[in-house]
Length: 355
Image (cartoon, rainbow, N blue to C red; front, top):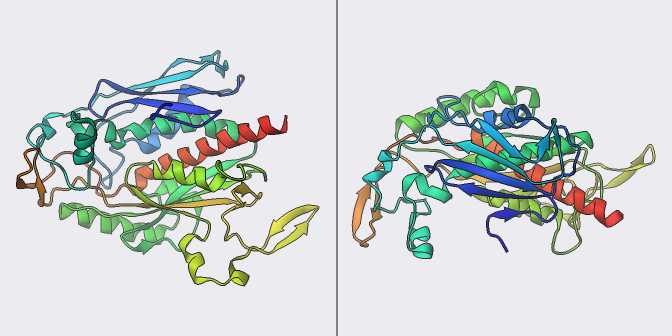
């Protein structure tokens, strides 16, 4: 058993720390013959990297990926694909003066209790820097799934209580918060910058929609599509909740309202609504797969807070350094990657089960 590996057939294992020499990933189980290049992977990494705008961390990482194995003459060989990103803009001194303090909202205390020895530089393994390698692995999954007619698109649905009422995917990459509603995006940006000026942070909701997935992905009991999506998405740093389809809003509906009525069109089963989020009984039903994640406000803030140190004495803390005032914009490509990785794994499982 490995605690740093995800998946059954299409698996990925990440390694490295925020302020270590490098971070990396090994992807195993990818079918041979998939055309993939460093530019395909870099395109996704560029969407996650820091320093994109005023609403993200100014850490100057290019996140330049290097493929070490598993790809020859532009195609996967069927052997493990190893990828590496060197950490280039590390400022560990920002953490030296608070190395003995437990930062509120961070994993400092729990890592210390669990392991007895921790890397305090940027949180070490608990840092969201690790998610860059999930995006790299997800880029491979997205490329494979695209060839099967499956597209995956994420966006920021809400920040600081400001909700995107429109869903125009064409504008998501045209604003700094990655909202599908330009009018709402301007208000979101203002809320993030206000929190930043105050030395604080804000949270929000990220939504991912997968189109074109066939019916039949997922297993009946312990490897359900919705449970694996929840596992993958909840494993992203700062995620505190997952919704599938109508999610918690289902608690305010009657069965007659929540049930997705069915009909046939051109010999195919269709649904009049999609409260189920594209899955029934843990198995995809052919409709759009819809998932949302609740992203908490970033824990690293300049505003002074109460905490304790390693000696369990009460003290004050202000976290300096380069941090995101809102995590949603950079969480979008990470959420897309995790949805892609889950779907890729379940697609290959379904393929194997059919023979």
